[in-house]
Image (cartoon, rainbow, N blue to C red):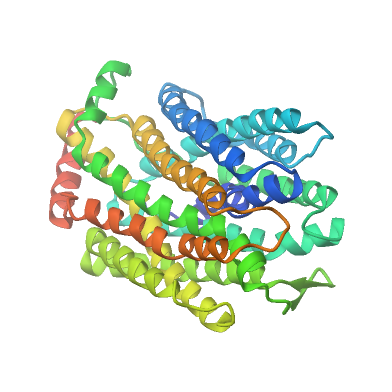
Length: 463
């Protein structure tokens, strides 16, 4: 259980989130734009669709976790889902960005069906993937390292997606409003994600077994989860952090298209061919690169001052910087990019921490109740993350509608100011909520050391 995790296995584990994050980031930053400006659906309708489909998807996550906890194969409980679901994940992602020639009602129905299926298959592959962290090692520092590798690869996958998405759409279709450009681009990413998920499957290993070898009992598993106070606190902190990110991400394309309106382009070379990078692409790429810096910094900082203190400091600074961001003008493009880097470093710090802390809460539950339901805890954690994304995504559509947004026309001063608020003050409020929750988190490093030691002794006793 304390076996040293090899570099190859850490890289393999990271590949899984590189795959997930490519589609996740495309959904976060471009799907609202795709539905409004390419598919032709009203933003308020899209916001409501995000709310309904993501609430269902969030509730679906625990079912996946329960199913994974009860899965028994020669490959383990969680790894098989990476093998089985990789191709459906890619195919449904492609269908999500396919634009059939339907009337308005038909488009809405098609969007509901394909997006709901996409979120369900995302859960079926991502919940077991996240749960895998809880059974690869029992060492909390090794888990933090694994989580950091996961997040480096996650943001690396996001960086690759955001670096290539607009150049590829423009290459295949001629403009960001091209239906063909989007379809072929998502096909490319579908192939990449399938290869990455399979790589994760073949390079990782499940090691930990529950102390008690009794059959899973759903009622007792749920009861243990309800009594898990650290998990509830992480749920609140996670929702606040996801709302912070999803509002900023969802509004960024609109911010540059309708507020900054910069015509400057940047040339990049991909496979021997030059592509023009827009300010929006540069903003996203810088953000993902800065996220990676934050992820790398998280482990040494957390090892020195603790996970809770690192989380608290990062989100507090992100909130302060976001408030300042509001006062940047449309001509302050360089300052916009600088603040994007600073805010993204702070945001990057928290993600490896929160998933490592969820694994700690699984240990806490086993230590407190004598039972372990890793899949359920991580699925419920994934549910909370998606719920935060749901609130942020729905709020993005509703806020655009509230501020009077109309697609592909010049926006009023009120609308432009609303878009500014969506990248600054409103996310700052969500970050503040996350900070308030994490202040209540009870698992200090000393407490976790005691829990780890006692669980290790119990496992050795039962061998």
